[in-house]
Length: 294
Image 1 (tube, rainbow, N blue to C red):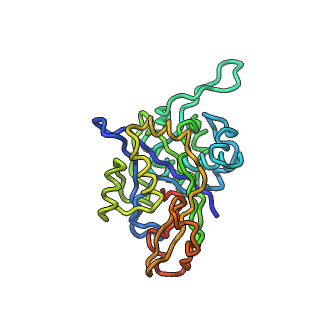
Image 2 (image 1 turned 30 degrees about the horizontal axis):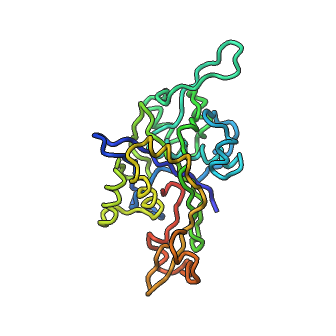
Image 3 (image 1 turned 30 degrees about the vertical axis):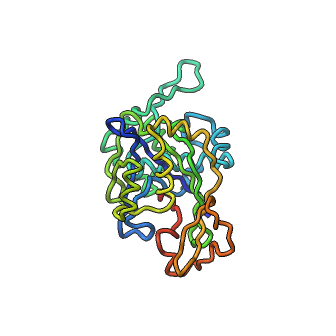
C-alpha cells in the first residue's frame, strides 16, 4: 500500500455565498479516474522522505499525532502535499526566509506572498522539473530562500483504498486556505480543466451526471458544504477524527454498491464480495482514492 496526500484548497466565495473548493479535471485518457474531478495531490515520493526540507510551523512531533504516523512519514506526507499542490496548480504553501540576525540561530519565515520569489517563468520551469523528478522540493525551496509552511495545512480525513482493488493507497486529506497573494495557474499535464466550485454546486452537478468524481471527493465536499466560511473549516479540522475510512463493496441484485463505515451493512457477510477482476469493479464506485484523486 502506498502513502499519499491530497490537498483541498479553499477560499471564501464572493458575496458571502459560503466557500469554494479548487477542483481539477483529470485528463480523459488517463488510466485511472480519467475525466473525473479531483483535488490536487499524489503519492509520497522518495524525495519527500528527506529530512532536509526547510520547515516552518508546528514541529513534526505535533504533526505526527494529528496524522497518526511516525515522524518520518508525517514529514513526508506534508512535503508531498506541498509539492503536489505546487506541481498541479502552481500554489506554493511556503514562505520567504529572512536572514538570521547576528548571533541568531534561525531566520524568520514571512508570509506566503514571499513564495512569489519565483517569477512566472521560474515557477513554470520549477513545476515541470518537479513533475519530471528533475528537482526535489528541498532544492526548490532552498534555491529561492523559502520554507515549507506546515501551519497552512490542517489534516481533515484519511481514506484507504478498498481491499478488492489491486492498487491501494493510504491517503491523508488536508484542507488549506488559498494563500494571500497567490492564485492557481495553468494545471499540470495530468489535468485539462480547473474550477473553483461551491461544494453544494459541485454536488448538484455530480448528482445530475455532469461532473464525475470519486466517492472520497463527493464525501469531502458534502462535509465542507456544512461550513459558511474557510475559517470555520480550519477551526473544525482541529477536532477531526482521522480514523481510516475504507469503503467496501456490496453486491446486491447484480449491482455493486459502495459502503462506508457508518452504513449498517458495512460489516455484513457479503461486503467486499466483488472480485477485483469483475467488470462491475471498474466503475467509479469501486475505484480507490489515488494519490491526488481526492
